[in-house]
Image 1 (spheres, rainbow, N blue to C red):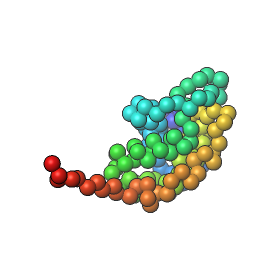
Image 2: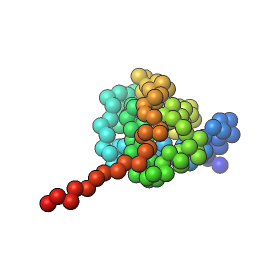
Image 3: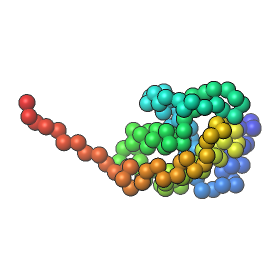
Image 4: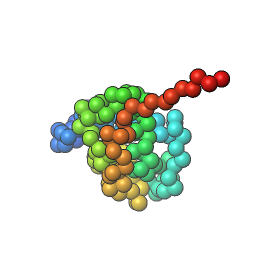
Length: 136
């Protein structure tokens, strides 16, 4: 068993708040932010002093919201809740768990609290309806 799988298994065993799918979803959301949403990177440096395509906690929360709606539509909140995610602070917990096992990196200016209270789940994942005009 490779070290990454072992580290993830230990993480899931030691912190049972979140489902494995929650961790995978956060990783996918980061890729979505960078590749689909084309979010500009936050000017910062990673742990090792290398400049990378780093996003802030606030940016990642926005990307997670967009990706959740894109993937699950009206069920986004239900799906996230089923994985143990109930607020944006949970995204921070997941990210910092991944940082701890070296699956993600942080810059010197990043803080766990950057993820707190970014949006309310009840309103952020509420269905959006747009009225179409028949006027021609």
